[in-house]
Length: 68
Image (cartoon, rainbow, N blue to C red):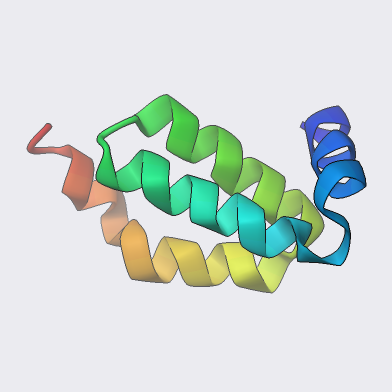
C-alpha cells in the first residue's frame, strides 16, 4: 500500500489524497468494493483524516455493499 501511495503522490503531488478520495468514491458508487478498499487505503496512507471522512460519509458500517 505504501508503494502505491508513494507512486500516487509522485503523480498528483499535494492533491494526491483528494484524488485518491475521488477514486474511492467512484469505485464505491460503481459497486467496486475491491477498488474502493484500495483507493481508501491509499487515501488513508496519505491523509488519515480525509480517509476517516470517507468512511463516515460512504461506508458507515459497510451496509451499502450488503445489497450488491
